[in-house]
Image (cartoon, rainbow, N blue to C red; front, top):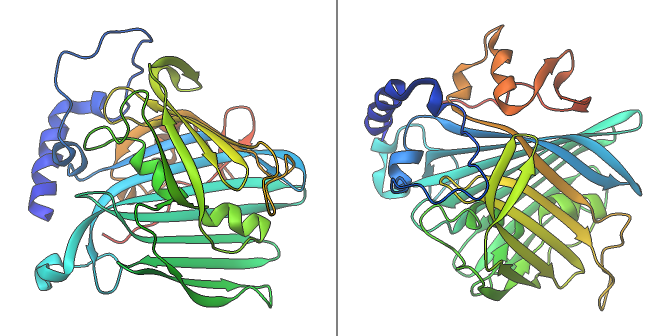
Length: 345
């Protein structure tokens, strides 16, 4: 795997700066004449995709502004331990390639701030989930949740500074069920379309750890209707104007989501917005707690784990972010994260 990564690093070096920052696809432009790259040729280049977002969330009944970063990268993963493998050659039968998403969301609430990260590990071959973990740090304390996906059930471990929240439990796996965190991979169609234009499907749905944490809700299945628009549309975000596929999601717990995905490969997430639409049977989401939205400010493919020297903050500009004393600040005063989550490679 490392030899293959090295070969692609050399190849990408020839491409130069054009490969670092994806350019906008003009709205209304015809499909590119060159075929889309294969998953392997794009994702095994020894780099990570870094996407910066202008972020808005409703917290304590008020809209809060912040920044979000999505980091997508492939890495060897252990089936038994559900952690990154240091040396795949030591136990190849236990090792599979995972596509990892680290989703960082930071925002201010009055005097104190929230620093959160969701990590999603899916199998590169079919994007089935292996592990989802979530952590949150704010002035009240830490929270950590880990979900390990098995063929029959999901082993969930939740550790909180609240007395009655920490627990270990098993939740039955449901056929064709989708965890909300998976959508950020599935909707991109990295190995082919997940939904065809105009197609809709209803699936068992597991709400995200991030939203369950903020609203202190239990881990339990609901349903979701997921529909792709019949045609592409032009979408304008801070990073530019793109042709995009649009997906609409309606959940059984009273939320509605719109996701705009770049038409051209690698089908980056351009824009998303979750909102509350009412109260179904049971406890639904109220408008004062349902908003979660982001818009792309910039994107790059970089080996970010090497960019930790003084001065490497300059690369944040490619993500539409700029460095500040307490982290990164996007244009317009949006507070954000630092140079990126550390990773031992």
